Image 1 (cartoon, helix red, strand yellow):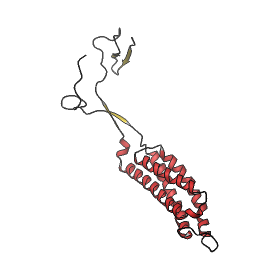
Image 2 (cartoon, helix red, strand yellow; image 1 turned 45 degrees about the horizontal axis):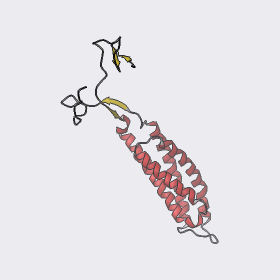
Image 3 (cartoon, rainbow, N blue to C red; image 1 turned 30 degrees about the vertical axis):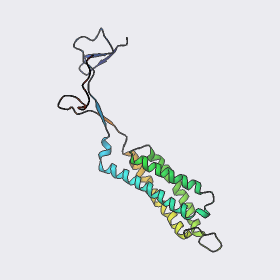
Image 4 (tube, rainbow, N blue to C red; image 1 turned 90 degrees about the horizontal axis):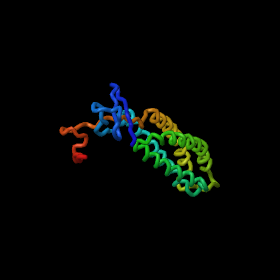
Length: 196
């Protein structure tokens, strides 16, 4: 038989798992009742606004990428695989961030840095295609260049808000005792325990 003895703040010992020679009739019993896990930082308006902004920026980024991908599909050659992958990953990150998953925020920031570099490099090349002799995409190349360069400030904002959200501690949990009902039970709808 395994005996586990715990000391409380007042110095009394409590015994669990069977009889104990050190625990007498005055030993403290294990706390009965349920605990509720709360996330105190998620209730703050600034945290909720940050989460909404991160989700919105991820969706805007996915929309801009979709526009560039669909508009330039005929001339993208092999880059469409990366763009479709980015769209799917950004939509997944937006879904996870909306569900308070703090771990996706640094991933979103890192991908935003990479996409920012891609957009800075690719934007001028769309403008260079806006001349005679080049195959024209479905949407005007100048408009695609503008949309591509528009991704730069969006990605900068995404990096800033994702890192701000990461520092806000969305994952902080506090255990609190469940509120007792009038009958003294933590779960009023639960049946009473059976006698031993």
